Image (cartoon, rainbow, N blue to C red):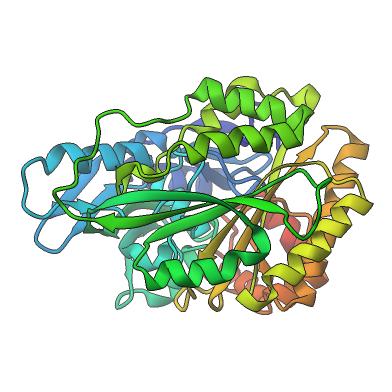
Length: 459
């Protein structure tokens, strides 16, 4: 049986019955009907960057959707673009750049994930991703509509006015309600932005963010030091923000940037000397302050390429978690987690802080109110002991975030307890019920779904 795995943590090797690579809606429909006749379940994936087996199911017919990567239609008047679900962000952004050369209004995507590029649009929808916008809701707010093929092979159009319940369930629904074949994305006028970088004490971040928003900055984040040996009072972070500049400001052909090999070197350094790793990162980013970028292109990144080139499973890999707290809770939460990491010798490789506005549209929202997003990558050894330690470390993070009334992101590890899931997602049982209502035969499955169905007594 073929083996599949996620691209980042590589902690999810899964044997599937077979792999199909459909290139059209008709081929997807036929695959679903064939699976139904055989009594098979279906899993699906694009870029394979989720880390909790959302895209894989043991013994399933696995659909590799990367062949569905075409531009379908571009409405230049209204700023809408329809694409097939398997297209990756760089191809979409590249098309928009090339196809609008010389146009008066240049349309662009508003946000994408940072750090990784080879993520499919359907996968981004299914995880309800976010970027580094200072005042953006998650990706659901950028979706006009999508087409989905359900467990009976029926094609449905979902929007805020048509099949509204399925629209809310499938966005952030991790592929459990059907195969998303096409997505229509709301675009925004492209602009030029200047990056401003400074090194700050993380405890001063929120007033700086408020000031940046007041000054019209659109994007920003803060990479905090992973070296926990320094003083708590001035735990440093690299604070980068992006401000719109006049249209006639030139965007240079070449800007100072880190090559994939530089990211690989930085990853090696983070594994051996965390203080020096942060100093290297800080020095580089300070050198980019003042550079001008396009608002969409600056969100592209080759960080994962560097990681992918050097990571080795026998030396461990990185598992990400994201948690969300109110702005007033950020510093108390960070202080508690910092102390916990020191006490339990938690091995952190990367951390950043971003900002998010509420999602009031998806069924299973992770951004229920205006929040601060804290991302941390923990190094996990691929041994039973290493995985048990990672599980304990991540559960303690979730405990701390719950104490501050926050939430965690379901897209990564499935190691939260049932109590933690119910506290952060009180509608999760209803989500599982909705899954069975729309797909009573459980045609679409994953090991992530099976885990939670068992945890909640639905297996």
